[in-house]
Length: 467
Image (tube, rainbow, N blue to C red; front, side, top):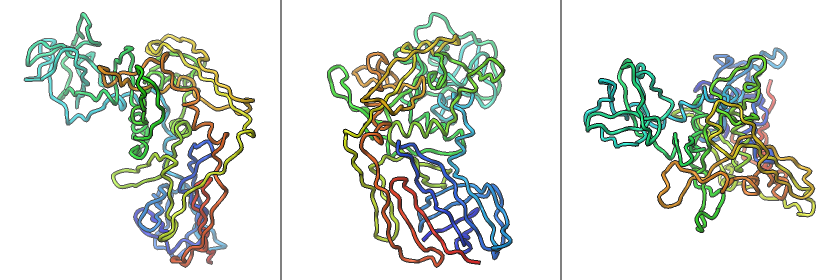
């Protein structure tokens, strides 16, 4: 039984018309689609919904859709309030993939409350029994203002002076120390970061971040949450590392943070400030988070579904193998494949552009990127989109490797057929059959039919028109 909840009030019995409800929709290249829908409420309601109201659709007790009213109009002829709702995932449209919005969140891998307090005494950091060792990476935070010139969006490296005192260096083995000129204000804390989530200086002296961690923080900045637990263990590729076959799961994928913020631009450079004045193209080239997340889903073959609003509006990444839909009690529908003969495949092509030297992305100097990988199969009539400067990295699993280290981009490039597998599946063989139709028990007097279309994964609800 479908339920329509408006700001925690159940108005299901007042719904007289409803478009199809896009529970889970995606394109054939596996990229999700965020759709809204329209519906009408009868006039016999105690309070008229307003633009901005939260709309939640449930199937029995399962929440299947979360959105916001974008339009409410009065239909005098039919005596209804006609409403339009927008999927809450569209909040990702408000976020650009840029340093100013995302860097601090990605770098801060621990909470302030878990940190250890310190203060500045004669240019050194004083913290009784601090427990730090030389070259240990730490992250600094403050409830007020950090001492000059310290920042909270990068790591520092401790230099042990005594059990109660330590200095800071910008990188391990530096000959000098950070010259701290003020004591700042408020309480300061240092935190031991999780190098699996973010590492300021890895084995090629560049910053890398866990890709799943980056996605989660993109959602947080948009006021949402992302649950990756259903896809964390999905093995994306198996390669040979030092002669040993090694599986790489989604939860282990890395990305150079500076390359991420250079996404879709023609240069390898660390552009911290987006300038949209004449003569600058960085702002115009920036990718909206919604586009990036949807594109990434198509790369890995994932889709997005609304999960819950308990504790925050949460969406889940899901892999195709886990798609099962409960339509009515004791009835389940899984999708099936429509096989396309290999000889009908016209082929595909893809061009990947980036700089093989990741250190170039640390500089503020425009360094042109080049076409590193040009992949073509068959007649190459289909062109597969790929963002410039996007290059997933493999976590280094060799003995002795540090948690945040990655394999060389030159020796172990990610793309070729492996990276494109999900992007080209729809071209080669995995088209879904058109539809599966079922009769349902009319537990709700307004419901006439319910259709499942596995190709688009849409629940289509048709209701009676009551005046």
